[in-house]
Image 1 (cartoon, rainbow over the protein chains, first blue to last red):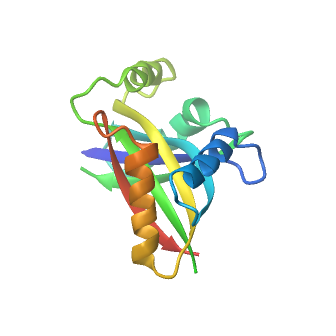
Image 2: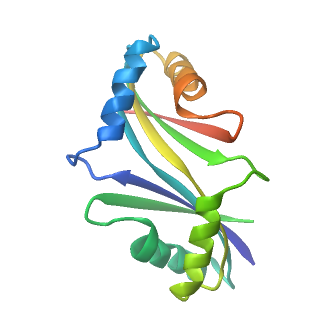
Length: 83
Length: 83
């Protein structure tokens, strides 16, 4: 079976997010004064071949921990979908 | 009221995704042979002050179109949450 793991990676709360700060300022300049805070992270999708969702989730979790996210500065969230 | 817009930006299907290709190869080297395809995009959250969800959604949509996504090469999806 094929699964699609959608992984959202964001800088941890309280840590510096210079990209987010810069984009927040840019919002004012295009007239969007109601956007008060922006966080910029990464979005990664993995297509995984696995017998069941648990196995697929474990692959996505290992990939996030070992390769995709920097756990010192970032946190991640995984959503699984069946393809 | 405060809303949190979560915006997922991915390279359009069929367009080059060199980061995704590179990460797909790296998966093999950490033993995750069941990960067959990787796409790398951006994940951006916006905290928006607005009277209702429609207004907040419109701000997020304008921000995506004008500032966050490159519509020639990328597509985006917005999820709204009430804070």
